[in-house]
Length: 126
Image (tube, rainbow, N blue to C red; front, side, top):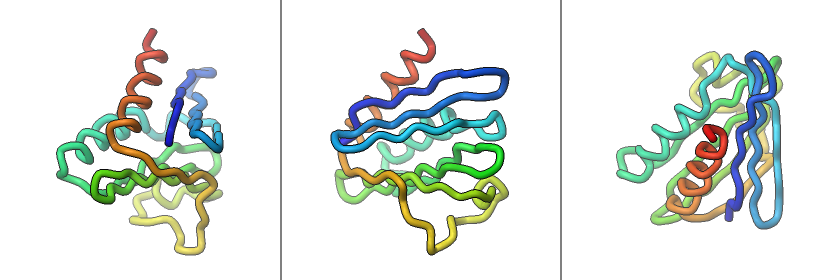
């Protein structure tokens, strides 16, 4: 289950995203070429109200991208993060290549994930 989400502004056009669960941690750079915080907020609202059951959120890097994949299964949320050294999703492709393996994976509830993400965004704004 996710315990912390942080998003730090690190310079002009750059940020760092960090996800921490009970058993793993991942952090990576994010470029201004994507808007993952907006997509994450609107996407979590769509998952919560049932209008969507899965999301792909791109955290662009230069080069490459991390993709946060969220899938609602009943009342649980599967969270996976993938890395690609190309901009497949950023350039509008529907999915990551099928041979891509997650570099981060955890399960929890939508409520817990949303609470942790919004706490991280509040910390950023403060």
